[in-house]
Amino acid sequence: MSTKTGRNIKADIIRGFAIITVVTGHCIQHGNGLAFYEGSLYWSDKLYQFIYSFHMPLFMLLAGWFAYFSMKKLEGDRKKQWRFLGKRVITYVTPIFLWTVFEFVRGYLLNKKLGNETIGFPEIIPQFLTYFITNLWFLWAVLVCLFIVFVMHFYLKDNVILYALGFLVLFVLPDGYNLGVYKFLMPYYIGAFYVNMYKDRLAATSVGKKTAELYGNKRWLYLVIIGIIFAGLFVFYNERAFIYLSGYKLTTDTWYKQLIVDIYRMIIGFAGSGFFIILFDTLAETFKSYKWPVLTTFGRNSLGVYILQGYFILIGMVRITNDLEPDTVRVLVESICICAISLITTMILDKIPIIRCLVGKPFLKGEK
Image (cartoon, rainbow, N blue to C red; front, top):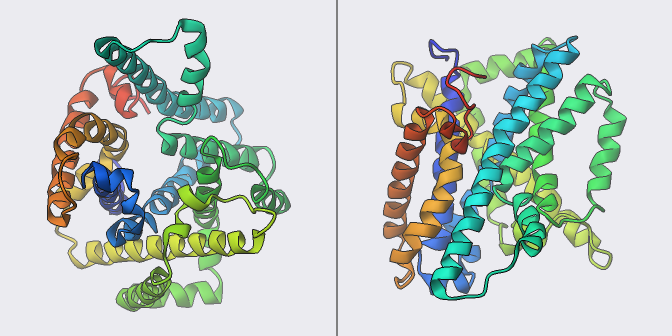
């Protein structure tokens, strides 16, 4: 299913759903009152755990899948390849840099207003650089994965041994500066890239043909099976499963426990993502005439919503919710409001040349 502009409707539906879960997760964390946040009670919130078990892996699967389509057009042309990579770097790094500048200017003005001491220019540089390389971490994660696949695909002939060695090395590399999160998300991006690359070859095998035929006729069966697997895995989800708490690197004393957590987290990410991909694929095929306008609009603007929602939550919403008690219904209302405000702002900024780079769009309309 594609639009007249060539966009994949199913992918936009899934992106739209995923970005709404991102906002909801952040509203659970920051919108249940200051005591709830400072006590880190969100780690034990079941809806929060459910969302975080799959939502970022889902985004990375989509990113890796569509990265192959982009790179496929660049085969044999070195100039186009590096031009493509350069444009992606500009698209992702520009909003990170500009929003980091915004954060530091806002912090400086706030400190001046409160009468706090402000640091000088030489001292601010290392702080700025540290924040810059950790701010809007998901954009960095996509960029890191893209660069790895780019080099492996165009220059190292998709060497399986190098990938295997790299995967093993990840277990001993440090987790600082968001590296733990990048390591966690790499298998989804890389896996989706190569499944897309080899899908025709896989589909030509006898097993592939039977699987595709069964899926075409009985999508709901696949949905039920993977749903049961996802639900069964989620029963064991706890605070240790959060990458932000347990990290990725194998520790020296309890390395085997960490390895179990890493493997479990990876599997449930694939299971949860697979469930929602099949769910929305099934729904889209069942209701072919329905265009899913809300989800597709969020999907087309998911990057901008991701960038803006954090600022609307932290600068605006928490001022209202800090003194409130936890309430699920109110959090859902907060999520709807933040989603709407972030989407509308993204769509407005998208129409303004140059400024649109703040929401992850090319400087000029029509650029790719």
